[in-house]
Every structure is written in structure tokens, then in C-alpha cells.
Amino acid sequence: MAVGGTGNLGSALAARFAQAGHDVVIGSRDAARAEQAAAALAGAIAGGGGRVSGAANADAVTAAQVVVVTVPFEAQEATLRGLADAVGERVVISTAVPLRYVEGIGPTHVDVEEGSASQQVARLLPRAPVVGALHTVSSATLARTEGRLDADVLMTGDDDAAKVVVARLLASLAGLRVVDAGPLRNSRYVEQVTVLLLSINKRVGATPVCASSTCRTSWLSRARTGESS
Ligand SMILES: NC(=O)c1ccc[n+]([C@@H]2O[C@H](COP(=O)([O-])OP(=O)(O)OC[C@H]3O[C@@H](n4cnc5c(N)ncnc54)[C@H](OP(=O)(O)O)[C@@H]3O)[C@@H](O)[C@H]2O)c1
Image (cartoon, rainbow, N blue to C red; front, top):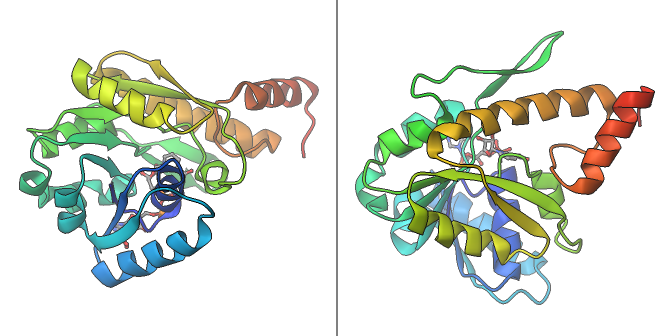
């Protein structure tokens, strides 16, 4: 299911999806690394219903119904350039936040020629319906599979049927609420607001990226009082 599935977000999502009963194929540039990650996850998920396996990215994509791209933005073009045929018309979830950390400033948005990282995915995978999602959900929160999620997912996309598939898939993770945030071009706002949230979290010391009502309260109260944790 995931390209770049050995990373923080990819492996945390793999764990959550498997726990929810979905079969997951972790993709990697290195098939052996993917298999290792899958074996580690399979052992760690207590009572999970889905099977977790690992494969090279192209094979993982071919085996999947939905492809989740979880590579750093700077690696996205190189990763996806060779995968267009393998992906074909599969539904693709784009998660990348184009940012860089600037010394003394913190997280800073990186301009994307296409308008957003999700629109870049759409250019690189021209037959696939691309849906932007999960940008504001923290991998650390996802990885704590013993805890219930409590977060809003802003979803963008131009293909209504693909959005239904993604919304159903994400709603199968208990505690995730999916909000339709409009067409794929709106992904730029979601990606940029994620940089803002990361920046606020860095200043006020709140839980890393998360859009739950609990976190919102925590950010606001801490921002107002200047409190840090
Ligand atoms: N972490 C979060 O909380 C979070 C939340 C929302 C969105 N996102 C987005 O999700 C994406 C992945 O974030 P992450 O924190 O999971 O990153 P990460 O831990 O660094 O993992 C990224 C994975 O991408 C693969 N990759 C492919 N080409 C790469 C390259 N040139 N350099 C480094 N890794 C490469 C690697 O897998 P192989 O080496 O096995 O191929 C690596 O395990 C980012 O675009 C980020 O903006 C992250």
C-alpha cells in the first residue's frame, strides 16, 4: 500500500491499516528493507487483522488497490518518475509537505512549480486519481497503535469516486474524521497550513502535528498563555 513505507509515516500508517484489517504491502527502494520493516511490524501489531508484507516500490504498487506515497517531498519526483506505469489508474494518496528547516527560523514552506506536492504527484502519475490527505496527522500519534486516534484529515482531490475510496479507507481508522477540502489545487493550503502548525508546535511545545480538537485546544491555550511544555 505505501511507497516509502519504511519511514515514519509509512510504517505508522501500515501498522494502523493492518490493525484495522487491511492487507498492507510496504514499499521501499530496497526490497530487503521493506521485508524487514514488514516483519518488524507484523510482530508488533497485537491482534491485527491484516497481513503485512514488504516489496520493492514497483512490486508494492502493483499489488495494491490504493497507493499511499510517503516519501520526503525532495525525493518525490525521483521516486515516482519510474512508477507511472506500475501505478496506472490506482487511487493514490499524496501526503508530502514541501518544507525545509531553516536555522533560526524553523520549518519553512518550499514553493512547488505545480502549485502543491499533490499536484506534482498528479503530473508524475497522469492516469491515477490523486487525493491529498493526512498532512496534518502526526506519524508519532499514528504509531501509538494502542491509542485511539482523534484527528481531522483534510482531503483534496478532483475525482469524486477516488475521494469516496480514500474517505472510506481513512474512516476505517477509528477516530479519524475526514473533511472534504475541495479540489486538488487546494492541497497547497493544506500543505502550507501544516508548515504553520509545525512552526506553532515548535514554539509552544505542543504535540507534533495533529488536528484533533484536543490538540487545537492545547495549541490555543498555550499560545494565549505563552505556556510551554
Ligand atoms: N512524519 C510525519 O508525521 C508526517 C505527517 C504527515 C505527512 N508527512 C509526509 O510524509 C512524507 C514522509 O515523511 P516521514 O517523516 O515518514 O519521512 P522518513 O521517515 O524520512 O521516511 C521517508 C521514506 O521515504 C523513502 N525515501 C525514498 N527516497 C528517499 C530519499 N531520497 N531520501 C530519504 N528517504 C527516501 C525512504 O524509504 P526507503 O529508503 O525504504 O525507500 C524513507 O524511509 C513526507 O513527505 C512528509 O512531509 C509526514
